Image (cartoon, rainbow, N blue to C red; front, top):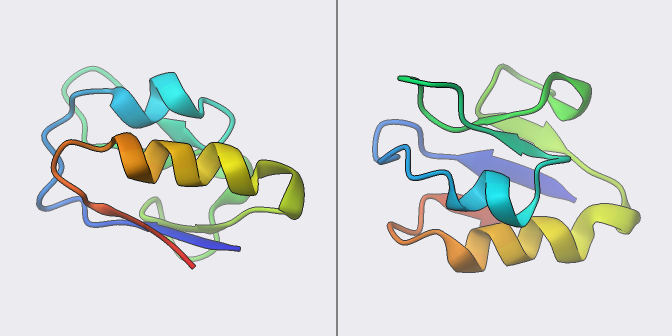
Amino acid sequence: MKVSINQEECIECGACEQACSEVFVVESGEKASITKKYQTNGPAEGKVGDDLNNCAQEAADGCPVEVITVE
């Protein structure tokens, strides 16, 4: 499953990290990013296995500014 973040629109709230810390991280003063383990093309794009589909989707659904895409 492909996961991406529109970092320009991210408000650094940390909701994605709270919902799915295995895939998302929000460092202090930084925009949300994909954890290094799952990055495919920089910090805003990644790929996760089936075991993290629900977790990643929960993070996308919980993002208040809807900047996370799960495909």
